Length: 484
Ligand code: HEM
Ligand code: PLO
Figure 1: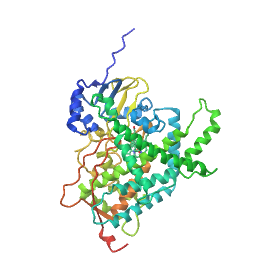
Figure 2: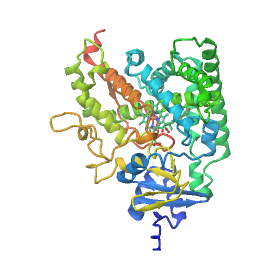
Figure 3: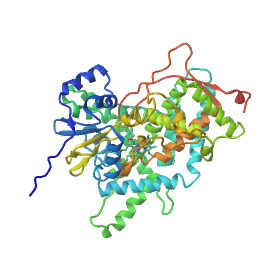
Figure 4: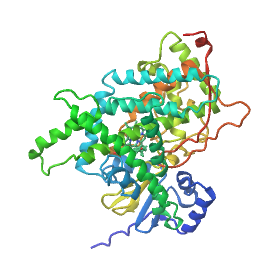
């Protein structure tokens, strides 16, 4: 017969020490930027082979969509790594678990619970507004002083997911909340970093003290989860499920009863249940609070954007009532600003690595089974062919000439990923971002500390693209000053 055409593999980086030195130059390795810039030399799709791990880096939206959408199931695997295995008890969660029937079941349960407690009802809107009100109170008491908004933003979003997961919330200064802030920061600082070691093992950038810190933080988190688990299990009634923990406990019970009909049987163990809640809790807090911090920082850099949002708020809502979700349609400029923040500083600049579950291809290139596929969202969102001056913060690109909202001005925009691994919290996150920002900006004008250079817009690469700490002055706007 005819000879098979020879497989064509993505171009591979020949001289790894070059990257090593680039990383050293960068000091703090900003992998998304490095992978973005390597396109100049190696094209938009290239590979790195290090030790036993073959990795492919995707920088173009056509390839990204092929991986996530067209061949989503083929590329739905996740790698095991040392740190994520510590965090998730060897991948018993959703985000860091590879594709399996049980993973599918976990996703489905969470999806159902989130829509049940979320968009269908007004309950979630009420919770978010309660937290927005409390945050605005705190901001007005520390008016005109320089304030790090991070803990306040963090408490607000924490309480939203706390309500959702456990029907509980924290007051200011609650020691358990302080402990939570600490462990979560510890996890963000250490988890998924060793993937660097996988790529550049000679760098030894992952010292053991980081692993020890991660283990300590995970232990604190696990105690907190365990306590909620126990309380919910004891209180579980026969009819109503009040939160995600209840919903999963109920699913676990149903499963035990119905398993005889399922072949092969699935088992949602206590570990799976806890790690699933841990995922939603962790994702719920760290992603949304990070975006809020980026939004505030960009408003300091672009006061004219802040002014425009406030004009829109004043016109469409005024000062007699609070913003609500049904105002979203009426506030396209605020919505466009949120979209632009998610473009210019994607929370998850390299997504979570995908793994090819079978031999596959991307474009004309052969991808072997087991390859790790990194989607560089940063490259998609900063592609000069798709975005006019991608480095510039310009909410206007998400509006048409009449000021109407453009949902996606370019196909090269995927802040929440796509396909079977798409973010589970997109709806929730968008509600929170809209309401928190609308509440804050209706009442306050945010200003940078006077007489100092503006805080840096440079992110810190990690499992989320973090904002470096900065302070703001929240000034009560004129209409609110005479006591409302
Ligand atoms: C996964 C973005 C908020 C839960 C992801 C992924 C991205 C993302 C890019 C990875 C997709 C992939 O690997 O292909 C965001 C952004 C958020 C946000 C930009 C905020 C603006 C949330 C919230 C929750 C959440 C609030 C929880 C309620 C998850 C989960 C996954 C995920 C569970 C893993 C899905 C899987 O692997 O199957 N998110 N997310 N996210 N997100 Fe979000
Ligand atoms: C954040 C710190 C928490 O303590 C644990 C945690 C759980 C789920 C992770 C989240 C962290 C970071 C953001 C992640 C999320 C799952 C999906 C989300 C990775 C590590 C994104 C943006 O992909």
